[in-house]
Length: 107
Image 1 (spheres, rainbow, N blue to C red):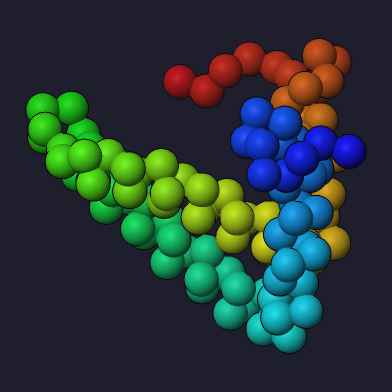
Image 2 (image 1 turned 120 degrees about the horizontal axis):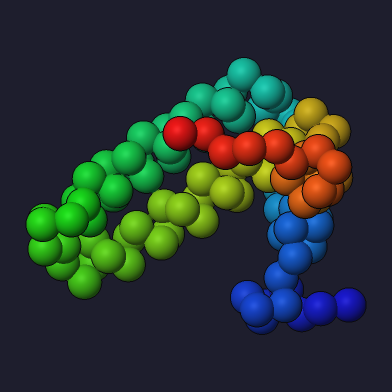
């Protein structure tokens, strides 16, 4: 089994399992509506970080580091929502990895 502390070895399934193992009891008790609100709050924080790091803005090193953290937070809360709702994200991603299902690009 890959070491979850090694980011290079982390898989989508492994990350979802890590989030499930650490937080599912609390997340399930909170439920989907409240968990979704936490997710949206993190999306808002990511939006702010993206704005601070936009081209021509000259972000500070702290703002640059925060951008990565906000991406991670959004992904973690997305995994939380998937866990609470019984969705296997790796399986769901087959929509993008199965050549017979992938069509075109969005403009």
